[in-house]
Length: 344
Image 1 (cartoon, rainbow, N blue to C red):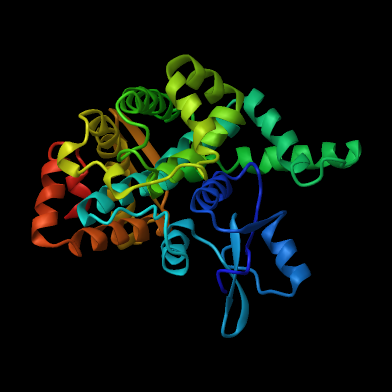
Image 2 (image 1 turned 30 degrees about the vertical axis):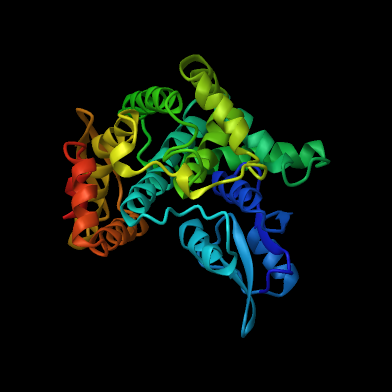
């Protein structure tokens, strides 16, 4: 791939990770062609081996062996940093970049629990999603086809809620965590425009992707967000297209000068995401099919997820790669948040 060739990827409007990458590419001013569709079907049409697993978005990268379908937004963001210079979303300060990595990982792996839970737990939200998701791929779909797809999609996704740990017992935990997260966002966005200063980082786009659905797609979290955090609603609208923002290195706020409100976001990561990651990782090591732990004073049970154990390992690798001085700065920033337990 050269800078002159537009970057192509396959995605859907109801996919938070698609929205994450689309906004990031707009901000970075990388010429992009979006193919709205199902990655497996589009790859088949193009004669390309689909990725495994098949996820949205699926990027189509040229390499020495031809076109290759690639998924997983976090490494793709780092690949784009190498392929396209300027307007970086990774801070040069390694300590600050690590905090950004934590925020992006939290967005991708925990904030998505809010999204999936609200989309399929309540019947009104499930009805909404089961109609809009198929129409996003074919707005002119015949009514009888839509009726059949609606029922199939709703049944399948509702029956998959257990995968993210959503059930009647954990529903209050998820709801309370989302409300705390919104309070943290409301406070933090009152202090600065983006998570780490005056320019967006990868973590901003991770949060934005999930929030496009929570604020703009699903009725229950949309009402909650409008009630509890007007700044988050406005921020999501602004994050959609930051191509006109002119970032400067000075726009990053140093770790030591971050407003106290950043700690509210970090506290939520340590409070809910850290115990889940540790319990899941132990289950992977033990070969257990599911795990149970206490989160926010309640029992949380869900199937073991190998990918999230990999995420924890990658986080620990990022932490271990820091210099002694930068690791000390990070430790000072994270002290008392609960995130420390994830890093040892």
